[in-house]
Length: 315
Image 1 (tube, rainbow, N blue to C red):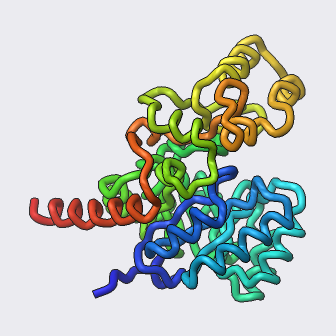
Image 2: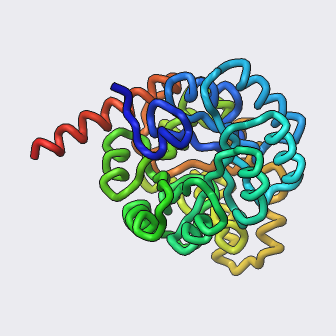
């Protein structure tokens, strides 16, 4: 009998497991692989020019007949062009983040698109629900990439958001196993969004050197940085240390912007320049030890989730 809950019903998927739309990692290959395996694959548009996004959407549609989504960071340029392409290509699900969900949700919903917004607090979860989104991703402090200023951990955030809204809550931040998924469900989530674990797959478009850095990372090897700009969790490297030194010496926003420069994330995660690049990854990287196909990752998470729930039920 197929598993059904608010998240699987909302997206029309088999398992309530969503692959995060990460920049420089989540192209059509990863998204279609996750969707074909029964989860919801998501293309990360934040690192794509409009024509590149259209190409990835079309290739994803050719590679899977299952639902998939596109992640749209609302602070990126060419936003209106991205939205137009999403509507023209009839993408069924859109995840928005880093901005006001009121801006684009009505238009997307008008065209039959399911809209999910990423939040880092219960206050923003309520605002997202008021904006008309279908679900929220509650992303805790452990998550990689851009993060909330509140620094609320997933263990605290999920029950707070679940208590504040009536729409489905998808847990994110530090989730890379079935045990973590079971914990998220115990706290009130109806689904999970997994990012870092899907970086360490052959289908992820990240550079092989970055993937190797992820699977060799240990506890404490990531830290939230650039809080004066947009807080982002980074793997410690030469660039991270340069930022840390600048912040310790009182660098202002403009100095930090100059240090960051352009294309820093692409340089690290896509081109494999591990010293000079910005390496965005979550704390759960400390628990990832091998690169394996996305379908295997998804099914391992699901099977461990069911086993864990069964074991807990027998206590």
